[in-house]
Image (cartoon, rainbow, N blue to C red; front, side, top):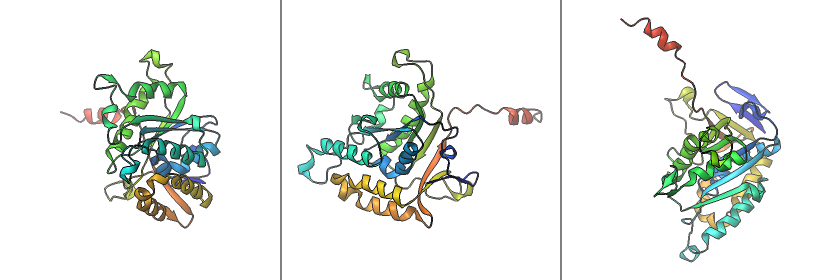
Length: 274
């Protein structure tokens, strides 16, 4: 497995290129809008974290209640998908105790981004408590752009809720624990190249994996038996489009939050103002 930084045009066998300052023993949270999204978009990184001495935690926000292909499955689909998710992430090396289900109805995650939902406690506080208790140092979440409303909501959970884990607020939810870095992954089309972007691409980091790592991702995806019809085209397109001569490519975008403002350019212009 090799790690790529398209911004600096560097390649390295070290996870440090994806997670700067990586230390063995770190805990990484992967935000999955639906149960299969992390397997689809970040399956190599889940394996990389384990191989580099870290622990991946899979946070599944939506319960999958809209994912039935026949009327007969409607009443059992949620329980079925939970079993399938446990089996799928086990194929990637994730233990059952490191999978969290928030059980939010499909297509309904966005209202839970805030602290309160219809006057009731939303995901916000539970997520902050989890990040602090598990000492999560990295957060990986779906990009949400051009994909799905639940994916967009998971993106906002990443950029809005997660940074507050390190703030001295809500003291009853545990001792503040800051997240070091953030990455966004894409499931479908968000990282399509675009001429307006630097180097013509949207993603700036990547993992180049071999056939063995890809085989485990495919094993994980085929565990979602109930989603076979729904995922058929997605998985086929997903696999064929990311295959390259050196292996299989998984794309990421580095997300920088709360970066201090550099006032020096403003000071320089201030001197020119009349």
